View 1 (tube, protein in one colour):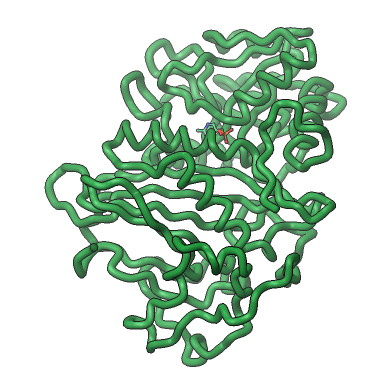
View 2 (cartoon, rainbow, N blue to C red):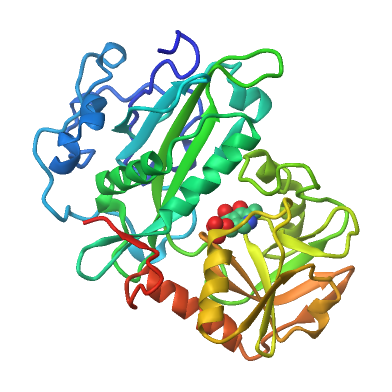
Length: 418
Ligand SMILES: Cc1ncc(COP(=O)(O)O)c(C=O)c1O
């Protein structure tokens, strides 16, 4: 049990109104007077989830919230009514949904029991490990709605394994692969009405693992929280499938050998904000980083991996601790090999960009994103003057057809939820 400090209670918030947008403050907000009596704000949990024992306690946080239980009275129909948002204009921004998943354990324990709670702000001690020492990881994966109503996840166990690897690096306990995948499934099903209709986007799933316990000296936190929230999303880059424009950063680096570049710690992302903001201010889509030792080998973009294409050869920087081992990267390598391409993972010198036919980026959020230009030391190299390159397009189509359930899953990568 936690003591009165870190994560002492999760407070239900008015969450469904996406128009509330970014004005929601980080610290506890008091709900409006009618919030706890407003039964229409949340979809009820599917009856399947209500029966599962490890979700049994989701229904009340009553000591802190006027004694009102969550509204879960009527079982949801198999396919709940879609949320009332503009499905044609989804970007990559947060839309609060109905439920989030929470599971906690102490430093010396394993995670054992989690629960779904209504989506809302959380309470943390000011001395929580994550706030003071950045002891936190995140993951990102997507759920797609197929035309027959089924819901598909793409290789969720890979995200679970990557979280375990990251947790080990920054001294945190982590959920087992099975716990992770089951929690993802439960969270997605509970928020089914927020999954975009086929062809409109996907439900982005954001698992977090954090040191939520209070700590003052530099040390692992005494308590950990695994949390999953979700948000419907469309394209990551405003360009959509149109080619993006990258700039190579020569002064700042996102990772160093022996550091944490190869795991998904939150600090890796704070480290890229300055270069990324400067690049965006100059009209670039994002930053491409070089290795911090030789300053001449490609690493990756702020939130995606990079590939170059030359004829039938596809090359990507090898994973050696400073580059995040992307699940999309790994999948694209397999898809490309299965389509007869030769794929190499090795050091890729920045000069090789000059002779490439195509460059593209991969990631859960960006999927396969063609690169239209790369600027290095003031010199701009352009690709695909007549639009998206043939190879980028071919791999994008192959991957997204699989993820959306439009082609046969010969790789065994898809997890069906219904
Ligand atoms: C730094 C970085 N590299 C690469 C990726 C791509 O990883 P994945 O394909 O698993 O989403 C991500 C995405 O989260 C990332 O943040």
